[in-house]
Image (cartoon, rainbow, N blue to C red; front, side):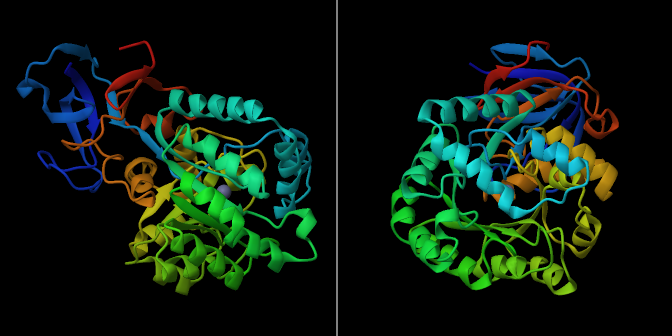
Length: 396
Ligand SMILES: [Zn+2]
């Protein structure tokens, strides 16, 4: 059954009008527009006055329609929570990578049903806020069994599953980090690779150094996974350059970059994924997004939703932060949260609304994309379609 969404005040397409096939292009909009969904895909976009007939019609009444958000970085398989740690941090204690270990202990002790329920609750929370594609990492199990069940559970809710056995060295390997890297590249990888598309590593002081990170990524790629890297979050480091050299889809965080890091990202196939919710929640300085954008790097925005350093699942909140705190324009921020995320996941079918794209789209209770930053904290996502199916929202 085809659906015509008409009287769209602003249709954000990220694609030139009439383009068919190919991935997301530059930020682009149509005013007084319409869109036709058929067979789960975008079949047509253009002026409302020229819209073809369809089986059903939805009147947007001047509201904005955007591609669904693509959240390319999230850690949703875990048990427990760290509200007290957050409160202590807000009272002046610094964030350290070792905090991950408390979630590891809770996750290992949790049954599959609890992990699954927690994951599904967060996935539903994301969808209701307009996220129609999300990546989900393992990394709170850190044993063969616990990492395998983490990626298997994640694969139930998204095709974008990331094996992050190299999140932090678990306590039982504290005196033998090399032995842990061997496990991550050996039995753990063999158990997890069938459930995953991506391999990731936390390349950071207190986690994994450059050589260990490279070993993990090379092993994952040899097992058929594609690479992405947690890089340069807590201080300057080799992560970004490693990500570019190895051909990773994305270098995530990019909070501490030098000129060589920026130069490496520009013109590479590696997206700089910024996670401003982390800086907000840890009171760290924000990444220099303007420097990246002005140099020509491809920038994505993602939540990094996790129980420690940033427990938001809201892409609209991250867009508002990107505009207010990192000086992105509203257009740049929305592009980074849709098309940018799609590039960071190497997906051509999402992040835009060109003809042929997956019909993943959201309607705002607002006339333009700018309201996502103009009205921060307000739940503006009025309706969500995923694969052409209306999955959230009642007003239309
Ligand atoms: Zn992360």
